[in-house]
Amino acid sequence: MHNASVDIALVVALVVVGGASIIATIVVAIWAFRRHAQNAGADVRASFPDAVVGPELGQYRGGTGSFPSTRNTSWIVLTPHALAVRPLLGKAISLPVADVTGTRMQRGFKGQWNGQPVLVVETTRGEIGLTVESPAQWEAALAR
Image (cartoon, rainbow, N blue to C red; front, side, top):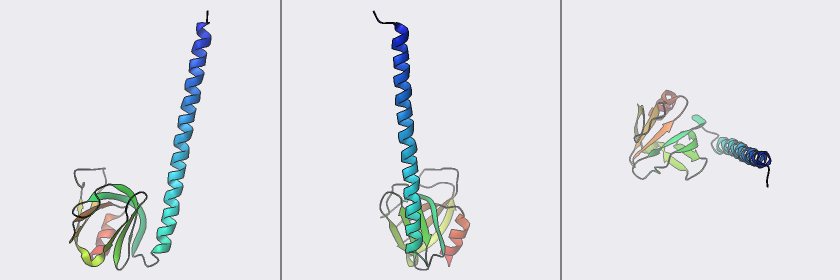
């Protein structure tokens, strides 16, 4: 006959080891994702030496029309000729500044709100929503 206290101790030990393994996996995944974001930022900075605003790690809130609808953490940069959105995962967007027909600030975009104002960029192809640190600065730069 088994001793019940030995069985309980074994179950507790297995739960602790399993939990520690899960936590370690999550920590490593977060570290790897942050490292990827930093490397991507360095690549964006090197790719856009003529940046007017950014590059900045912000949120692509999705788009309408022909723009991707998937929201994503992205490096966002404005040059004299283009607004570039480089998501950490997913398809890059390069929007010629000449295609921008207007901008506006909204509380949310496409039915989603995260507590931060969204800069909506209006174009001939549709709209994109961006959450950036200083939306007014981006809006002013796009208005030029």
